Image (tube, rainbow, N blue to C red; front, top):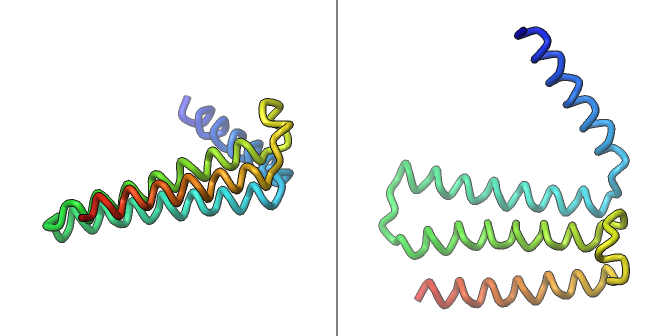
Length: 115
């Protein structure tokens, strides 16, 4: 039972890896950016757990900035993906402009939250 589960997991990992090789470079860059943003949020949470959260607004602002940016990047990835038929009429430049504008609004709100 355990061997078959391990073999299934390995087969799943291999198939995901071989499918991801065909992913365009621009989508891979967005994926790396999302991973970086989530990793940064995790580092901030770990730092808060170890050191403390005295300026709690700063902690919340930092984590929400990272998570919000990651969510916006995932939305950008969905819009830029050529295989997605819902956004086939949307130009990649327009999707990127939406991403930048939403990031500006997000960070203005976060700066306002800091006080």
